Image (cartoon, rainbow, N blue to C red; front, side):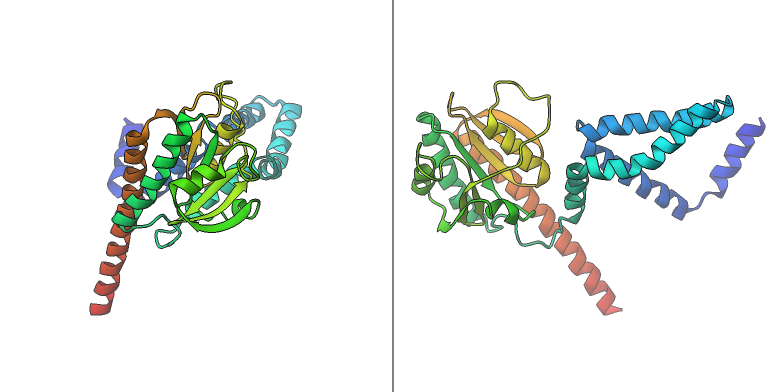
Length: 281
C-alpha cells in the first residue's frame, strides 16, 4: 500500500514539462536504436548493458577483483567504442545533420524528376537485358563529394544512351559507380565503401555490397544490375531489394522522391507559418 501510495503521489505531482522531457528522451533512444539495429554496434550495446548490470551485482556480492575489472572495462571501453565504431557514429551524425532545407536532393519539380527517372530506368532495362553490370547512385540530401572525387568527373545531362555507354564492358569507366546529382551525371568510375554486414547472401557480389555500403552511409538511392543474371536491385537506407522490372523500379523511385519532397515542403511551410506568427506579434 505504501508503494502504491508513493506511485500515486508521483503521478499526481508530475508536470507537463516532465512528461515532455520523458517523451523527448524516449524518442532519442528509439531513433538511436533504429540507427544501430542489425549492425555491429547493436551487439556491442548488448555487451555494455550486461556489464552495467553486472557492476552493481559484483559490488553487492563483494567480488572485488571482478568489480575492478568491469569498472575499468567501462572506462576504457568508451574510447574503444569511438575508434572501432567510427563508421556507425558517422552514419548517425550524418543522419541527424540532414537538414530539411538542404537543396542537394533530387529535383522537386515533378516533370523534371519524371524525365530523369525515365532516362535512368530505360538505361537500366537495356543493361539488364544484355546482362551488363551497372551501379548507379542517385544522390539525395547527403552530399557525395568524397565518392565523386574518387571517379572521373563528367557533368553531363542524364540520358539512357550515355548511361548504357558508360557501363560497356572493358571501357575505362564501366567498373565503378556512376553518380547522378539532380539532372546531371556528375561522375563515373567511382569507388564505394563496402558494407560490413555478414548477413548478406553469398550470391551477392561486390557491386551489391558497395550499393548497400553507400546506402548505409547516406540517403542515396543505388541501382544495381547484376552482371551474372541481369537482375535489377535497389539499395536504400542499408536495405537491398531485388527483382525489379522497368515499371516497378520507376514507380518506387518516384514514390521515394515524392515522399521526401513532401516531407521537406511540409516542414518548410510549418517554419514559414511559425516565422509569420512571430512577425505578426
